[in-house]
Image (cartoon, rainbow, N blue to C red; front, side, top):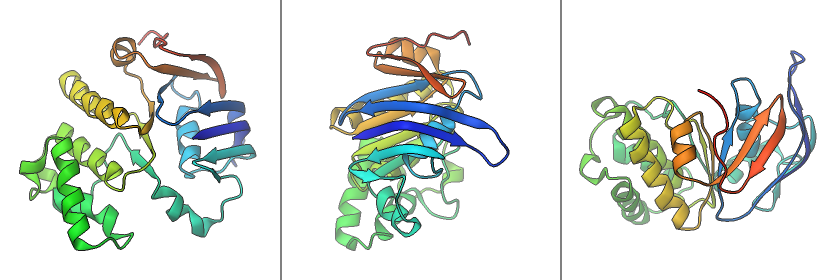
Length: 228
């Protein structure tokens, strides 16, 4: 599903964010990406949805070689990948329903299909009764639920989450994790960068630790492994 071979990323300012990374993630896996600040986690995540391009090496996601992917094909790739951000990135003038529907409208899905699917995912994330509300009328946890709904509405095979509970209180963070568990149980591959030690140590999944731009640990049912 996701494969990196010899991936290095050097930024124009000379910072070497990743160096010689090799990893393979199978369909249906749930993987935590952990490590200290500045270790290279965000770069690792951004490479998976072609926000960044590798300096060297090969990245394949769902059969697509991102290293040679033309810029005009990136939107097509992102229809197969759901991305959840720490800061939600919702469109403030659109309702909950419209924010989620927008992801289907850009691929020109029919209105009938959009309505059915949007209500399905809003029910999954527990927001069916808030479909007409604007983001500013929601709590932070509810806004993140909308972001998750938007990320899965097109039934992607991979969901990538970059610190999705970073701005949330502990109880809300657990609510979000319950949703991710449901998504993963449906067969979706989930890769989640996180600093949340309690979640990683409680909901045991594969843990990939990055330090100094290198993978230093890769364990099935691993623990967080860092003091926070």
